[in-house]
Image 1: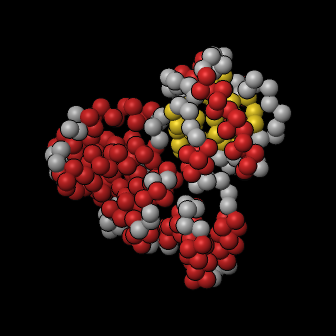
Image 2: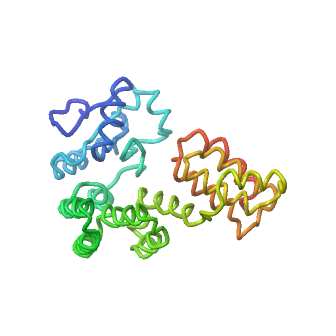
Image 3: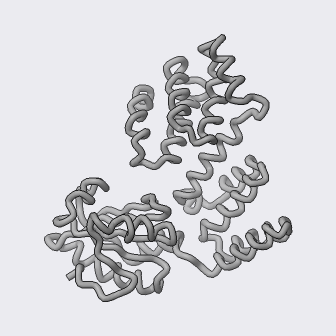
Length: 290
């Protein structure tokens, strides 16, 4: 029985403890949630593989089982329509999803990207050195760590965050664009890439007040709306950004090679698929997506 678990790394969740077991723990490390049913044979075949993987990582990842027959609210909330369904949580967000039975090899290939590795210790030392003002040495340490462990997405992500801190946005984008495709698809890296793209868009000489003044006199000034979008995203005023993008789509759907549609997708990625603003503004995107 999947529910009878005697391991510090494996738990069974219900609606009342989902916040603490899954969301809170995901702020400390990855949490793999197994949506299962005793009536489904693939779930019973899947579980021994999950048990083996979790103990292989030795506490660097948690497994939380959810009985879909009993926990109907959680099952509905996360859109579970078949079992087994696996969802990996990090920082309270779903970062990976698997539908149906998965082999050990398939799971390890993805989970390795999220579980702490030896190179993370090198990264921690590099960050410490960076805070001491030894920036060149810190970048060299991270670069060497990337060479030695090219599949750890946290290494290039940390480098890009340091570059962003120094307002070297285009350099950070170049680092991401040069990554292998498998690493570039990492959820945190794609989100950071999309955020950086708005920083690159901004003209620092044009602030929000000045741009709004421009729009008062020229309501169809698309360039001003584009600049406002970037400012609002960076200020985390996402609905204001989305309103500007809808206005651009309504005025000129093909503007700058469909800029507004592409930017809206980037905002959706930053928000996460379950954010209410995504559901609210997706119809505006669909009107002009062919």
